[in-house]
Length: 233
Ligand SMILES: N[C@@H](CCC(=O)N[C@@H](CS)C(=O)NCC(=O)O)C(=O)O
Image (cartoon, rainbow, N blue to C red):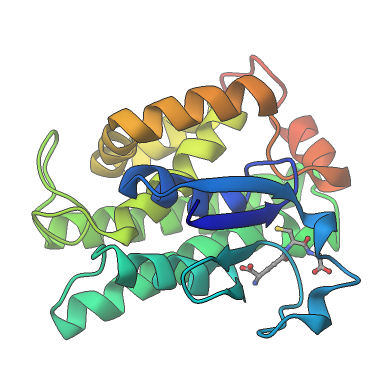
């Protein structure tokens, strides 16, 4: 066993870490976030505010913050580009993804979505985020069926965008058309990453358990009102 992952019984942020762990072939076990959060959070060697937490058996330490956990793993398994600019872009991509998670959940459900605010977000910022990734990919030579977000080799940035959009589209299939329209190369890249053998096997197993659940709570209910199942809009 190499790692323990503490998260809720949902894909939302945890799936980013699980996809990377699956792709590198690391051994890990899943634990409910309540094993640490909130009582034990402050007692850890590296305290963190909220799940996910990753325990690394090698250094016998815990790490929190999804982007930091991905960078930790990416460094160990050589999933970071070596050129400084691309290294920075890999981190930037993960942080973009984490910003999008916050925006989709309306800052963890501070306010519920209503039709106006959702439509404004969906066709405004969400569409623009998709276009941002499409530009980045094309600037680095991604083609339909060839290449990755930051060049010819896979990096943690590919795992992050596939975890973001693959999970979102699986939970809310109506959004597939949005990604296709705004970022056709990224739509293809997401499918390609999800089809990698070990990621595919992990997702099949986890999705059989999670179903189409996404982030949970009242905010997921509000999202589902905006995007009812079977809605092609
Ligand atoms: N910036 C943190 C956010 C962590 C976070 O908001 N975790 C959520 C679940 S995805 C949670 O359980 N929050 C409880 C809290 O903030 O007290 C990260 O990226 O890991």
